[in-house]
Length: 77
Image (cartoon, rainbow, N blue to C red):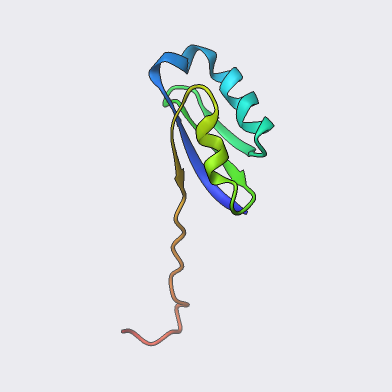
């Protein structure tokens, strides 16, 4: 699964529930809806990221990047 953040365009902020339904219909598992920011977070199966851009009201779809720190006992580099 790929974790994503979807930004909703200004014209669809009032209809955020409709955008969420459209994303779910395209296979997105919605984790969080940030109403005030117009951002929806969740995950999609790998390789289906592009399908989300076709949902009405979606301004952008960005893959969330993960950071892994070394264990505390690891040597300093």
